[in-house]
Length: 147
Image (cartoon, rainbow, N blue to C red; front, side):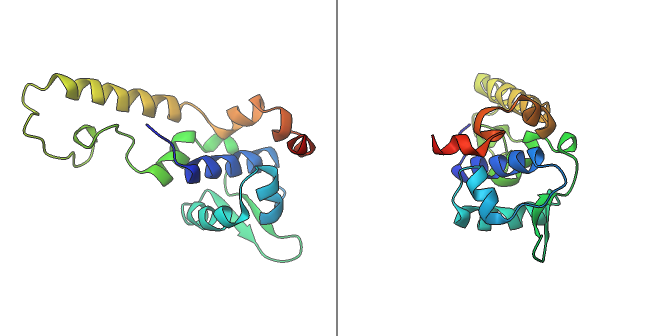
């Protein structure tokens, strides 16, 4: 599985918001804190807002903040939001797998399903509270980004 830049940037934003607590962060500050182009955040934040992961607040002290606790947001939720199906091949998806003339007796299908299941299990088992607790360096001190 290859994670797109958009997904990478979305996970960075959620992690920074997780580290920031209940305080709103302006989009420019968020972009700087997670080393992501502001233009990309302007694309991914509305998707995450519509999915109920973040909320936006207007006004001088407004910005973005998490809509739920970091412990309630898994890496799987964010990755799936941007990547869709997590199966490595279309015939191994859980919902509406792509038909394949080789399915009967296919020794590959079980392996692809194992890869899918292992990926989902790993991503479901990691919350943004876990990631925040393990964070160091520029995640905790943005001044280290300029070094």
